Image (tube, rainbow, N blue to C red; front, side, top):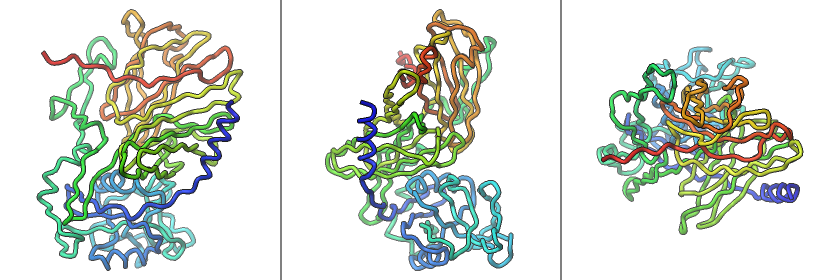
Length: 441
């Protein structure tokens, strides 16, 4: 049966896909600038000229906030390297933005810029580096590129009412509150008082999924995307991971971008799908080597879907575990049933969808409500981690009980139960649950 399933998925993989049309023009409400991903392969010089012909310029990234906006709103749609408007061609090592803005903020990948062979003078956002910065020669390759327009530019595309759009709350998902746990005497992490800085409630804003849309025929702007998370990806000679995705729109095609991040936060795979209205597609995700991490799915239409993980030849047992798409990231999750003894263990997988390091705090509670272990895990930006319950318990047996997890900004997680006796890595999996709140009286 497993062989038949795998052969079917391999056949599905052979279906070809096409590239996205130029990305929608996006307004950054914080600085009033307009951005557009141009999906035409050009040299750096050609990309710069193209943007200037439209009244703009090749994008400049002068702050962490602007970098975050561009990554979240634009680069997540790209499966190509992308040009940005900086060069050191006049004086080696003296990088300058083409607009004359100060070159103070940088996001170079480790070891860059290295000016290899003495001819790398132009800035690209490199896909395999997670869109961190890299220096390359102008004529060595052709990349996609981002054009930027100042709000003061008279040639900015379309007739746009800046004030009207800036009043919209569609970017509310990017303004998350600051949450910090305050220690109490019992030592349990998730039993800490959770104090919110500057707010009294946690606004989930339908939890990072943004179904709202601004579409004015006079502006040419739309701002709509649906984001989903899959906390576990694994590929090896024994394990395959794939997705089964359904388009919830009965009238519009779904353009889907799948991005797989390794545990170190680097992008290891991107793929696209086109799903007809009310249709469904299935795809296995292959990497060049054994890898583990997590996946993010972006679509212009709402989706439903699952990730399936197939194990073949793991001990004496084959299995298929299904992981439902998560529509949001969480600050609190509970695993309602866990066990760890000489036959069984519980394995936790946690992904950090944020572009900054996140610490996840973990409590293990016995079935009679007593805290038996407490720990924390630091996860790099866009990275993931995994660990066993037995490692937290340090050899203690736990038959029944639960795991409670908390993080200040958010995470996603999945749990697999491991059969130690048979040698099979996992038998079944569950998605941790968000604890219910008591209704206000």
